[in-house]
Image (cartoon, rainbow, N blue to C red):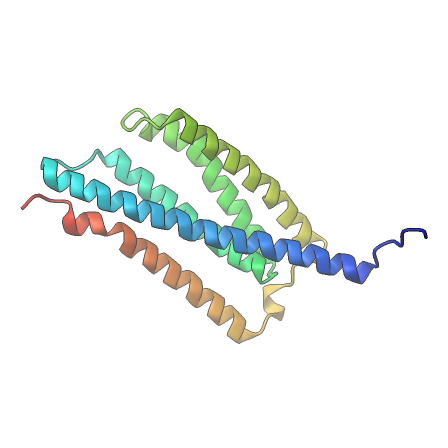
Length: 186
């Protein structure tokens, strides 16, 4: 019995499902990174309280840069999970943010004061390259019409997605604010 080609409608469902899964992965990735940064900020605050000296400003700058990137990546993931065309713009911005960090910001401004773990930096590069590959897929999906124009989405869905991003950003700010509330010795 010959193998039947996949009908275009079925291929579309497979592509959309794959894109939605990638989107959810990046939403969860954003949450996991922010949680890890929050735990790191709490540990740094406790260390600073015990030692009586705050960590180097480069460490705080790194946390803020990574947290902002995580919100951007999470927002892009949400847009992709909903198959909204703004996902392409958000993924491009997320890729640029990562590359600017790895090529310019970290080596020139942060690493001299707060050297990264070599293995961790290698994993960061691998994640950035993978994100760049996904970004190309997302831009291609937007250009070929797989992603829908945001103007065609129901207003309630856009409002809910916007609220989720705003709440995520607020949660991120709150999670990193712990250092300010416990970072001084009593």
